[in-house]
Every structure is written in C-alpha cells, then in structure tokens.
Image (tube, rainbow, N blue to C red; front, side, top):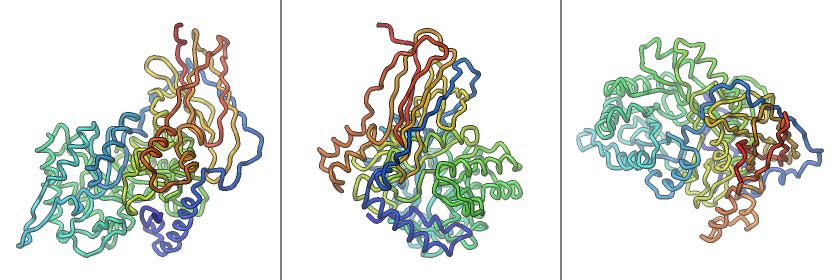
Length: 534
C-alpha cells in the first residue's frame, strides 16, 4: 500500500501552497520506512556511546496528588462502518481488556455507506437507522460509549460535489440547506435518545465535524462557514435535550479553540467542551506560527499547553479540553508507530500533559482502518495498537503497562519516570529510555532509590523494548510477509506477548535501591508490593 499522510495535514489553514511538496516528502519518507521496515537504530546503526546512568529518588511517604488516567479514556478508530466487522470488535475487546477505555471516536457516521440519509423523488428526507443502531449497539454491548463525530455530508445533502481524498471519499462540502442539516441532526439525536434513553446518551459527547481547517471541510471561507455548521448543529442537539454535550472545533494543529469559545460567548451558542488534534510531527509553523524546531517528544505537550492556556484565559475557563486525536506521527512510519519507540514517547507525553487536559484520544486502537485503502501488510506504520490479524504491537503493551500506574502521582526529579501510588498502598513506577526514531540510542542504567519503604518488599519488573513485547522483529525475521499465514500470525501474536515479570526482593535498607538496565527505546513498569509469604 502507498503510504500517504492521513490528510493534507501540511496544508494547514495558513500554508495551503505547501501541500504538494509536503505530500511528496511524506510519501518518500513513508516508502523508505516500509521498504526498509527496520527498527530504530538499524536504519542509522547503533551508537557506540557509553551507557547513560541516572539515579531517581522516590520518597514513598511523600504527599501525592491525583493522577487521573486521562490518556486511556478514549481511542480513535477507522470510520463508522468498520465497527460492524468482527475483526474491529475483536480488537476493541482486546484493547478494552488492557486499558478499560470508555469512549470511541470515528469519522463518517453520515457517510452514504451507512445508509442513514436519503431523499425521495420530491426531495423529502428519508432516514434509515438500521446500521446506525447496529454500530452503536455493538459499541455499548462491548462496554464502550460513542464519542460522536458529526460527519460527513450525505451526498444528497451536499451543496457541491467536493470530496475529501480518503479512499472512501467522503463529501466535505457544506449542506445544500442549513435548515435541512439542522433537521437531520435533531432527528438523529432524537432517535438516539428514544433508543438508548437520555440518561445514557447524556453521557456521550457530540463533536461537530473533523479538522475543518484542513481538507475535510470545503466551506469557503473555512472558519466562518464552520462556525455556522457548529451553530446549527449545537442548537439542533440542544432542542432534543439540554443535557446533550456538544463541542468542537475538532481542528488539526491546535487551531481555532480560543476563537470558537469567543464565537460561542458572543453568539450565545452552546458549548460544553472544546476539542482539537495534534501529531508529534506537526510543525511549529503550523501550530505556533514560528520557525522553531520542536522535537517529536515535546510537540504534543507544547500544543496542549498552548490550548490549555487559551481556555484558561477565555470567558469559559472551566470548559473541558479534549485532544480527540493525537499520535507520534500522522504519516506511516514503521519505526515510529509499529515499533518500541512508542513506549518512551507515550510515557513522556503522559508525564508532560498531566494536569493540562481532560481526555487524550490516541489515534487509533486498531489497524482495521482504510483511510488509504485496504491494508496490505501487518506492519506499514499504521496508527493502531493492534496490527491487522489481531497482532498486538509494542504500543499495545505500552498502554497495558501504563494502565497499571496508580491514581496518585508522587513527584520525582526526573524527566524519564512516573512514580505513582495505588489505593492498596503499593507503588507503580514507569521508567524509560527515549531515543528518537532512526537513532540507535544508548543503554541506560537506572537506579531507583526508595525512601521510607516499610517491611519486606519485592519489585516486579516488566519491560517493552525491541526484543520484548514487540512482534516487529519477528515479522522482519520471517522476511516481512505481506500476507502472513495463519500459523505465522499466531507466531507473531506469541512474539508480542509480555513475559512474566522479573521478581526481585528489596533490601530493608533505607534507602532501598533497585537497578534496572534499559535498552534504547524501552519502557519498564516496576511494581513495589509486599513480599509474598512463602
């Protein structure tokens, strides 16, 4: 499969003339990644530098603060119709089991393939809720609620033939008539309330459109026409019930959030949350309007900080902030989203964004995903935690480990660690060794120095790196089969399994010390519990 960026992302609202060049660069880079399909370090060779060393002191009796698991409450996924597939639901159940996530977000609930909207010979609307019901029933039956993205325009309601370039070619034009659009949104929401009840649907979110500052929205001019779409949609939802939650602007590149809030305040338009997107390889020019070079492990945090500060400075400072899409890359980079790189990147992003945001939705939970066409190989730099064939990637296991962190955070003087306390008093600590994609990195010797441990304790250590909890190396060793046999798929699943934790007894000294060796691009979870009675 050719690996294009997932949208004309480089053609931000202020750089449309750069689209062709950026797409060419993205395509060239993606093809190199997939053709080579080598883990980080093998592309440029392993570095020969001496191992790093870090000592991290953890006062186990120190005051802590709440640490909500905001990074695992919601995931994105392939478009709405894919949720009817068994492969989608199988992956969903696996990720639900690992993370306990509560919401799913996808595009195109109004796409014609869902069959929701049609017109009779006189132009009167006809609504068919058959697939809509099956889609949302399936999510709820698997313990996940919809984060409803209101998109895209049904063909017979579209004002122009304009389409976005995804493989399923959604219509991206404003509606032919705004009254008809508002009526459609109202009928859609009323049906959901009638079917599931207001007590249930009031716990969902309704987000107006997707990335209207890019090519997903063909309104001209983009921002004013989007605001009209937002106004009509928000008011239609509130006519059904004031309890329904609506927000936006769901922009790429952390754009428009402050201006949407201002628009809603000045026009007395309902807004219950704000949302935006950012990818770690977005540019400073597109997000901040500067020529600064921002590293991949800093970009998401910097963008979240920007929007958080805008909300707090607005007339509605208490609005929840939701990053309804994010990932380490919007391109297809095997050495990023398919590799062990994701663990340190993800953990560091969580560390940085703690306290700045309410929900972050990783894009996406599964490679049952067809924005660029039907997937042709299990490892191509897809966004999912699960590769095609129900094969967990390293990122799946990273989320699985990070799920075990506690709900109280203990401060530590390190940018490579998260220390937490669980309700039962046990500790869960994540430590990592970050190395950029394409760089070999160096081994890191980490010494955890625990102050205030009481009684006999033991440490349980699990690590995800290039050789543990990652199926990528096994796929490479097979010769990179595009269509693995069933036996090969099972072998890849076994290669992705996390082994049993290493168990070590901790001394009664104060401080008690634990040494952990971290290979480049590795994430470790260390659990400190009372020693088991033998």
